[in-house]
Image (cartoon, rainbow, N blue to C red; front, side, top):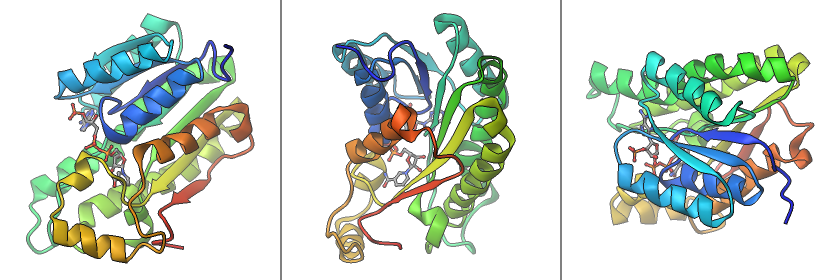
Length: 249
Ligand code: NAP
């Protein structure tokens, strides 16, 4: 069956688990060839690859730490070499190291900012040359509701995620004339390993702050990402897709 993304090539950073894996599988279902990036957990990347292949797509795994400029550049270059091009870039890889500002170490600050924010400059910078040549590209940055509203104990994470939104707007303005759209998806709390690491009492408190009364699913986020990549999303650029169960309006 023909998919809306047949013939397109997508790179998903952190595509091995959680939201990234759901994006990789969602894009694969629409016919895109998918590059699954991870940094540490090779077994999870293998599972993600199998899921993409089960959806009928070509998929490869590329290990790279996207917080490192050289590795992020090599990721995009290798992806383009393997599949001939990169049409879709999902900047999803992210981590958190939560602590109040007074207790936060410089290392905790730097690691989160490098991984969540600097990485998207590295990958975008590497991908946009080919996108410009073909006059087509879809770049989606997975930010967070925390980048929109702030949160106690997340100065590093909130600053990085807010930075992603500002980067998205600038990139959207710079790249629109080359047929490249750049959008931010800002999920609220989503049931992944990242949220599983929180204590039960914290989860109960958080759910109490969400009018729809539940966390989101990775698939719900992926559905929005796929929508933006398909022709249905062609007129969006520089947008923030807020999806958080009503926690922040
Ligand atoms: P997750 O389940 O913890 O998965 C994180 C993914 O990123 C894994 O594939 C991981 O690979 C990869 N990764 C981490 N550091 C990396 C690095 N330096 N280089 C390459 N890959 C790296 O996270 P998630 O909950 O799906 O979150 C995905 C994104 O959504 C993040 O940017 C997060 O901030 C954002 N987000 C999440 C939520 C939420 O509630 N879960 C809400 C809003 C936004 P390894 O397994 O190899 O480490």
